[in-house]
Length: 589
Image 1 (cartoon, rainbow, N blue to C red):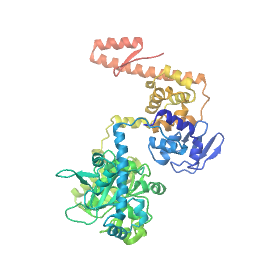
Image 2 (image 1 turned 180 degrees about the vertical axis):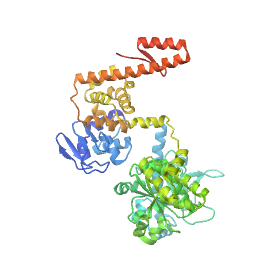
Image 3 (image 1 turned 60 degrees about the horizontal axis):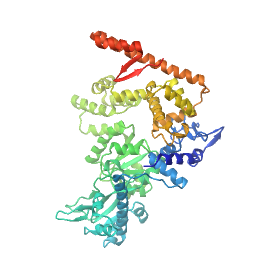
C-alpha cells in the first residue's frame, strides 16, 4: 500500500496544468485553460483545467477530477499505478507500507518468472537445437526484432534445465512450483513443466510477465500442441489477453481492437503492421477480458476460424459483448486459414481486405442459425425468432434494439408487433435493487443538495458546520449521498482544503467526476444567507418525508387494528420521532 500522506505530497507537487499540457495542447482562457476533451470526440472545447483549484472537468462527457484521475483516464491504469507514474515523473521513490505475506509472494513470483523468461530467451540461441528453432521461427515469418520484442524463447528437452538454472540462482523449488515452472514427478522430485517447447511469455496490461505458453517443437500424438502455465496468484487465464501490453497504444489510436485466438495469430499480423490485435489465449472471451478491452475501445472485431468450433465460440461471445455495451463485429476467415497463415500467404493487405468484410452480430448469428433452422416451417421460424430475440434483448439502447427488431421482422416477413409480444413474454423487467439504484443514479440531482455540497467544497468551516447540522441521510440522490459520506468520513479528517483532496483522497471515479464539475460550475455567490436557506430547505424536505412515512405506518397499524403499535407510532409523531428500518431518527425543526 502507498501511504495517504505520500499521495497528498504527490498531489501537492504536481501542477495539473503542466501535467495535462504534456498530454494535450491547452489554451489559456482567463483564470483557466481550455482544450478539446481527450476522452470523447468534440469540435468545440468543453474541457476545462483549473490551475488554481488543481482540477479538470469536461462539461461535454462529465469526466473530471485531479491529477491522479487524469492519469488514470488517459493512461488507462488503476489508482495505484497512476500514483506510481506521477511519482516517477517527479523523480521520487514511493515509500510503500509493509507488505502482506501474499504481496511478498507476488513480488517473488514476478521476479522468478522474469528470470525464467531470460533463461528461455538465452536457450533460443544456446540450446543444442538452437539452429533448428531459429530456422523454424524464420519460416513462420518471425524476424529477430519481433522475437526479441515478444521475448520468445525456448525450453530445452531433458526436464531439468530450468530447475538447474533457477536453483543455481538461489530460487526454491516451492517458489518455482508456485510459479508453474516445475511440476512434481510421479516417483519423486520435480521436472521442468515446459520441455522441448517454443516459449511465449504472457504479460499483463502493465507489461509484467505473469505466465507462459509453450508450443511443442515436434508435434506427436502423445503431447498437446500447446500448454499454458497453471493458474496462480499472478495469473488467471480469464483476466489476461496475449499481446495487450504491445497493442494498447495502437488500439487507442484506431479505436478498435481485433481479437484472435492464438499467440502466432496475434504476433504475425502485428509484425506485418496490423498492431491493434490481441489474442484470447484460445478461449471464448470472458467478461473480465471484455472489461479490460473497454479501457481502450468500445469497438471489438472478432476473428475466428470458419470451422464449427470457431463459429460456436463467436456465437457464445455475442451476448456477453452486447450485455457489456460493446460494438462487436465478426470476421469469418476463408476455410483452411487462421490469421497467422492468412497474413503469411496474402500479406497485411490480404488480411485487411478480409477485415473490411466484417459483419455485425445480427448478420452473423442469423446466417449461422439459417444453417440449422428451416424458415419455411412454422417451428423452424419460431425457434429462429426466439434465438435472435434472446440476443437482441441484450442491447440496452431502446432505439438500437428497435432497429434490430425491424430487421428481424423484415427477414422473417412478419410484423414487428408480433416480435415485440414475443420479446415481452421472455423479458419481464424485474425492478430489483440494482435496477432501482441505476434509475436513481441517472435521475436529476436536486439543486439544494448540489448547492450544499458546493459550500463544503469551497469553505471547510462551512463543511464542518454542515456536518454538525446534517448527515448523509438528508441527501436523497445516491450520488450526493455518496459524495457527502466521503467528505464527512475521509476529507474533513485532513488539513488540506476539501477541493485539494479530490485527486488524492477520493478513489471513487464517479464521485471525483461529480465534485470536479461542481467546483468549476458557475453559480450564484456562496453567501451565508444562501447556505442557511439551503440547509433549512433540506431539513424541511426531510421533515415532510419522514412525516409521510410515519403517517403511512399509522394507516397500516389502523388497518391491522394493532393498538400497541398504533399508540407507539402516535407517541413518536407527537414527539417528532420516527422509527425507520430499525433506526430511530429525530426530526429537527
